Amino acid sequence: MVPGGITEIIWHFAGYLKIFDDIARFREPPDDGSYRPHTEDYTTHRPHFEFTPIDDEMVTRPTPMQNPLPLGGGGGYAPHLPTHPTPDIGPEKFGPMHSPNFLTPMHAGAGGAGGGVNIIKATYQDGGTQSDVQTHQLNYMHDNDSLIGTHDANLLFSLSAAADHAISQMIAGADAAVPTEWHAPQNTAALPAFVAAHDQAWADRGGTPDAHSIGPGYYVNGELQDRPPEVPASDPAPAPDLGKGLGQWALDGGNTASNGAYIVDLTNSARTMVVAGDYFKTNVIIQTNSYMDNDHVTVSGTGANVETGGNQATNIADFIERPGVYELVPEYYAGPNWSVDVVQGDYYNIRALIQTNYLSDNDVTMQNSSSTHYEIHAGQNELGNFVLLNDGEFNYDLIIVGGSYHGMNLIYQNNVLYNNDTVKITGDGVDTNQTVSTGGNELTNNATISSYGGTNTLAWNAGLDDLIQNVSGGVTELVPSFGQLIAGNGGTFNVLYITGDYYDVNAIWQTNIVSDANLAIQIQGSPSPITAGYYGDGMATQNVATGGNVLSNDAVIVDVGNTNIHVGGQVYGDSILIQANLVEQNSDNVTNADPQALVPEVIAFIGSDETTINPDQQQHAPAPIPHDDPMANVLH
Image (cartoon, rainbow, N blue to C red; front, side):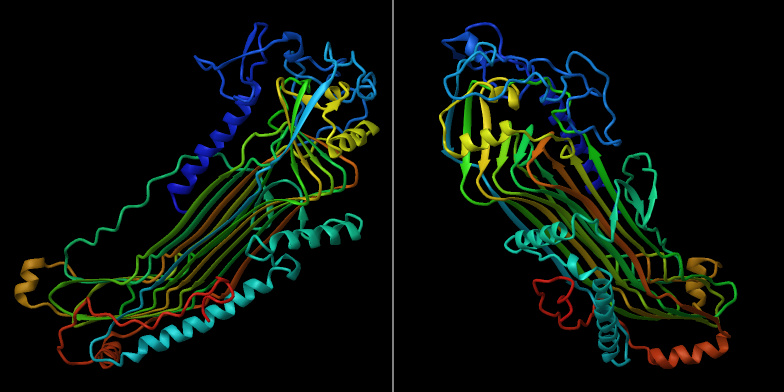
């Protein structure tokens, strides 16, 4: 994971979610005077209020639900899941809304059921803001460096062509690791159909869980583990200090490609949802890491320090379930004024974030020097994408869905690294301090889906059928017993009524593709007496670093759902996890050669002339044209 940025932002917004909870909890009911603060204002402890005169105090005062039951009692409601520990009973906690003593909804004109409320007045208007958000972030960089003196410049093109072919095969392998049924389209127009087809197939097989179904928890490379404690983000490591001594340094790796995405979805955050049809909710995390790291290193001394391994591929997936944000908020009579936003047909809240980094950093570096401090920096590129989407507000107390609810959260993360290196270093008549590092690459996927509410399913009864019938018919005067059927928060009761299905989808795709194939050759000659006197009697240094690439994806979806759910059909819930680390090849060959045998080979490859090499001179392969699909087409 890249230290800093995304982790710090996540901490801030984790606190932001806590603010939502606190605001709901401390919301003040109207006072006993002739003026009251606006109940739509969720800000607490404000020093000033906007006052609105009210003619009838009794009509506007919130009425607690009659005969509340403590949690853990009877009443025919579904118990909380084990992951939602029941809080202690206190004055701020009321029980489920369906107690045996609730009055049956009456015909219009009846009274006495709402603590002094004679009728509920309902107003209807077209409304319900829908959301269609699609964001593409693409970084595409070619940094293919050729520093080769008199040697054939086509060597770099051949190196890049081999890398492109290998990456194409690795991408195909990563795609094959994902079941076909989970290849979701990367656009908001096609996502609802994908979700509907998945839900229909789910219902057709009678709710049987998916083959990759898992329970809530923290998973690392497929294994359920305890969540580690949170630690503050550390500062990035300082750049290496190469000093000013005699020798050669080639830094051909050390690239960073990172994606950070964060979605806070509040569009479904009403206290209660009533779904006449079926209720589907699916959380999906799919993660793959693919890398190829075959290195061939030849050094001219047994004392050389050569590191070729140490690659790390990690997939982290966290499925978190939390109580609804209204769990600890007192329940009041839902009336006497209802404001109903009506949506004819299906309702869509769809968000798709696509992030892609593609880096081609294939380098051919050749160094032949004797009396200088010679550095080549051909890598160390940085590509990054970041997006934060905070969508929706606490607009409604009740959402009524005439059809079915289709909810899905999807996170796809892919890292692909090609890091095949060939390194040859030797000293010509001088004993050098040789260090070679070709591994140490890090590939990390980190995904979290944090769900608030959506699990407290309450019983269905005939009163809910009557409620839907009245609202669908546009009845402007509702019987007061409806105010006891659904919990309110005091003041105007805001309702969203959807005649069709509700599609609520959050999807994130993150892809890093890095090609870092390197050919690095060094020959260090004996310094002149003047140079030796200037630098001292210490040996010369030869250092080649072609690995150390960091590829990271970090994604979080915070889905704030309804605290209470009434479903007329079936309830389907599932979490899907697919994690794969695909090591195409990881074989290294290190040879300690006789300097007298290696020097002629290196000289023949570099060229024996004394041509001055311009470190700024580079040759680049032509960049391919990017396509819409970053995984399948980025190399075409």
